[in-house]
Image 1 (spheres, rainbow, N blue to C red):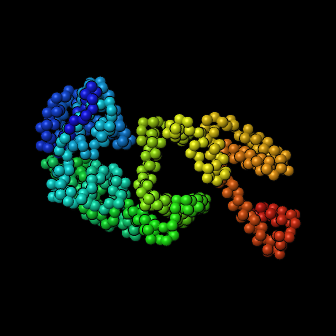
Image 2 (image 1 turned 120 degrees about the vertical axis):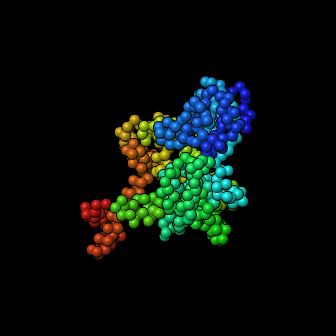
Image 3 (image 1 turned 30 degrees about the horizontal axis):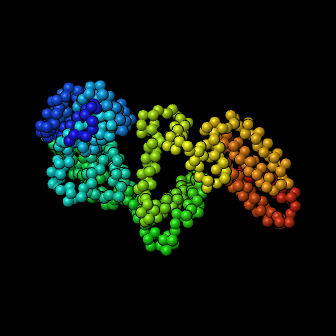
Length: 493
């Protein structure tokens, strides 16, 4: 199957060696191999790899690299360079080059190569024969074992899981489902089958169970997993939650009436309740997690609610939401998913901002993307940080502190003019936020903590006054100050 790319570009001919030993390598594949001097193998760990004599393999990259993504990226980079150097090369992969071959997919996306992919026998035909099933009639879904938790979400089977080449992959698959007997997502211990070394004399099918599949010996690159049926779908907990949001939207009179705008107050309220729950966490008391769990759930429901409204309107779904944030996070983390090198958290932040700027329109304002609905202190802090990123900032905190004194004097000077004093008070608060930013203090959290401390102390003043028969409303300032100082001296917070 030849590409329609321009013939004047370097040629990469891709062949598959079949799923097992040389019996499953086609004569057409052998003919293509024979035409090439410059040969490359993704891996020599395959029963038919000897058919590509003199080939350079990339097995060393699996040991040197931190992830499979890095391995595939480096393979493609090397193949591209070799194709440009020699004009024409051969690239051979196990199985079929059209099934679960990330490097082949990456090569075909390039515009500087003429990539010619030749069909070959893959492992799937051997699987269907070994299991004696018709995959179309059975409705089988093919899943990459490295992405099981996300790719199989909402599915309960039948599933054929490829790339289960090591016990740790099977273990990760097993642990992707909460199988606690008391959990809503518990699946029990369903039967599964490991298909091992298909297409070779060592071929065997091992019947086992979900809990024991990662204990089977001999698991290797020629192993795949057959899951006839799970007790509940993968990611069943979130799936149930998603369905609940739909049900409420369709059947609850209050939910039916809501719009994106009408839900805004609840979204803000739930976000603040999450903050309160975080403030209440005690590292020495795990029970304080319960409040955060509940509040995060309430906030998550608001997101699902908005997505459900949009889904009913035919505009977007929760899948669009998760895909958008997934893709954005991958773009913004080239040091994790690409070849960018960072040295510390500050480097990550600087790179993040650079990527954000690159995504904006050329004439965009520095303050584009700053939500005007932020609480005033947070808004001031965010705006100042944006300005500081382009160099508009005091070099150190002393300048910001001096500005507070200057603005305070202007408040005093303007106190006889209501409009002027309002403006000067805004400048004073803005200057105080600047000091907080320079000192690494979040002004919103700092003020909330100060308000909470004041409330605690004033409640103690009120209690003390009632114990002594003092009426706060009719007492003079001297009495109130004395009570306050007493409470302050005895209170640690």
